[in-house]
Length: 206
Image (cartoon, rainbow, N blue to C red; front, top):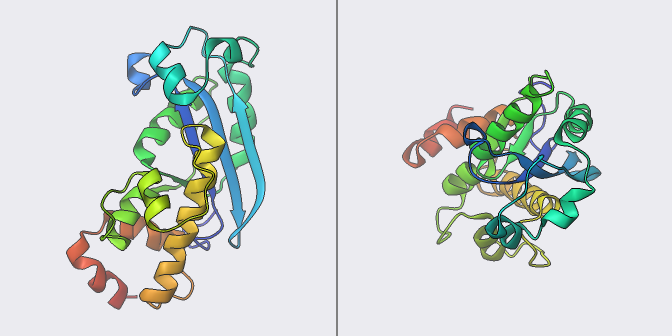
């Protein structure tokens, strides 16, 4: 999908994992994603996946995903083939995207598939467009912006759903406060990389 595609037509995704770094041997244990088209959720993807080893008690407590649940889950390779087909060439969004992007690249490399998608980070964009928020974690932003939520976090589809709602709030903020009537994905990437002090300059140059 083009960088100039509408910002409200993206795949928003989230991984739950065994740890912080695939370079240290950590693997994905759950993937959740929603497909937005013109600001509406038109499809969802969710699956547990068995990493091939036991998860720690800390991860089980943090994510709510235990070894009993993973015992009957399909292997990472099977789930990631399906997920690669789901995302196709859509532009991607994640909260703290560098984390999820590392795992996406790692898990797809393990099945000889390479993501050619573009990605950006809702957390970095929120830091620039919602500067008054006390913190910019997903939970804090959902509460601060009064986004509808059932209060469940750290399961992949729940977090993807909340990130999608946050994403649409950010797009709406551009339309309402910065008079950007049709923001595209490229602009969102630029916002994520622009220092706060230079935001007005970025919008004035459009």
